[in-house]
Each structure stands twice: as C-alpha cells, then as structure tokens.
Image 1 (cartoon, rainbow, N blue to C red):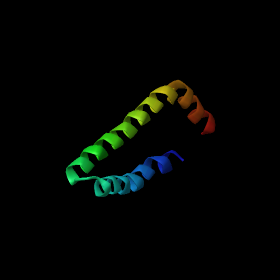
Image 2: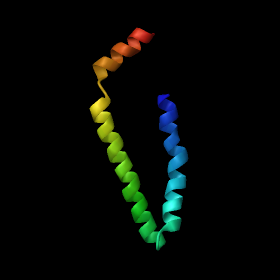
Image 3: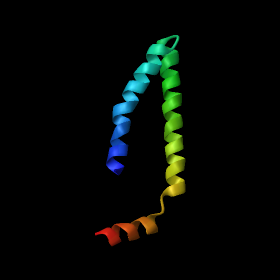
Image 4: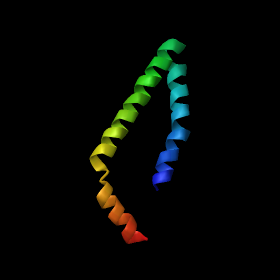
Length: 66
C-alpha cells in the first residue's frame, strides 16, 4: 500500500503540473504557480509524516507481522 501511494505522485504530478502551466496566463506564471502548489503538497506531506510516524511503534508492528 505504501509503495502504491508513493508511486502515485510520479503519475499524477506531471499531469497536474502540465495542466497548471497550460491554463496559466503565461508559462512563467504557470511554472511559478506549479512550484508553489507542489511545494504546498510537500509541506502537507512532511507535516503529516511528522505527526503520524512513530519509529518504535512501527518497528514493533513490523516485527510482529514477520
């Protein structure tokens, strides 16, 4: 599941970036907006990881499932 979520960004983001650049008033403003939008996604992902990742708990889960 984790790898499916990780790889979905490689499929979705190029199309999203292209759509943003194509619909912008100029290519320069489109690229600027693309960096801002994808940067915001990265920040949200980082905050989510900081709040949900617990290495000791996750290590116990991995060992229990093996």
